[in-house]
Image (tube, rainbow over all chains, first blue to last red; front, side, top):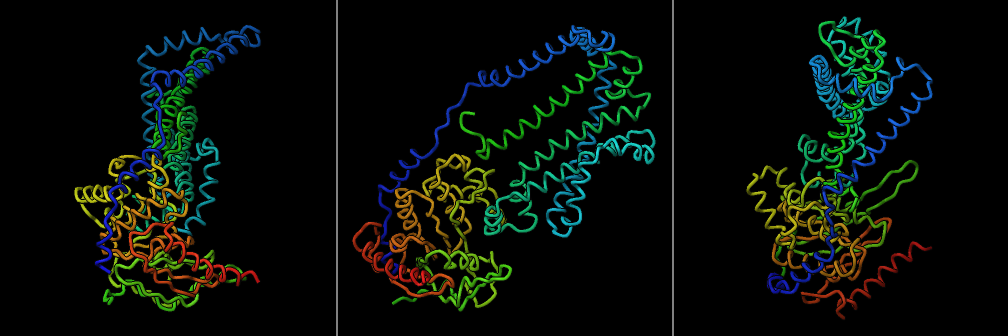
Length: 295
Length: 251
């Protein structure tokens, strides 16, 4: 048999045929100009903003509410441009962002650990699966009275609620991601010798990444919301924050700066979502071939 | 004349699936020996337990009855679908098994490159799997399996989803790879011509329960082509036998 086998020499043309077939088979990808792609992403957003401003201006013109309650866009934008030149504003933004990032980071650690633990153990999944979902649907503001009781009016009270608000979403995202891994990939991993931690690190977690990122994104939204609620309730005198500034503006009936601050809160939310999470999601989808060619 | 040792010894392997009130016997006392370096094709209609047998050999399913002896040999499995990891480049997919074995980076990389050259894909090493065609992905899967340094390669209808042209070329490629190595191949298919084209021996399994009903040595000299007269003649004969098996279930 050995003699017979060595007699089989690869046909010289085989390599050429394979190359030809491959060349025909590889899908063609045409790159779009970066500039035109950016423009096509930006103009609908600009149009939407212009439309919202127009509607706002129209409502002001109808005289539905007096101008000291509902000021015009021009007044608010003027206030905003003044606001961003003050040191106090930036220190408020810094305080708020620091809280948001600390809380979110802590939530990532807790949520991820919880997600891995729950999805790797059937009993834990049965015990805590629906509990985590329940926790996720609980409005985080409902935690504040208890948090204030536990931690008084302090940073810890805010952190506590931010972490509680975000970690169930992160855990759930990861659990969902793991649940939706095609079984074939897990089998392929096992055949290749992936066991225990190796399997978790090189097969399970990367395969679950899209679900995990969706959970992170939702977790961020929850932590941002919880944080704003917290800053309205837990006001630390010496430390200005976006939420507490909002509360002061209401107490002083300063409608222009109140709305200006709301715009800032909204913008930060959009910015993080649009710049951080959308970019990560797009990159993952493109890498895995989940983006339609030409889109 | 043949003194090659036995690579896979399957003895009286039975497997029953229990589903609620009914249970299906997938394999019924299947016995089979595959010699080292031999290319054996397992042929059967649906429900003959071909895939079950491969999963048992590779250890994905737990054996409940009978014995499977592969000695100290390392076994790799190629699925019907490429089952590549979509987040890794082609090269990193090939490196995956070596990574789990603790092979160091430089060696892993050069070995992967060498295997990609073997399947004529070295130019595509840094591409993502989704950028390749189905046939190319399946070749990556073969390279990934070979990277496990397996002595036994199990293939579960690996070319079933490919067009005829690509399949023909992959037959040539697989035969060339096999002939230059000491690889034992157990190749599952429901395509009779494919079995005759590739195998040293074609083993016919019956359906529900799967049982070895006939064996056909293929003595056609290599390299073969799938549409040569000798291949089609033997394939026609085996097809008749296979039809007989299927008819049995019609009654």
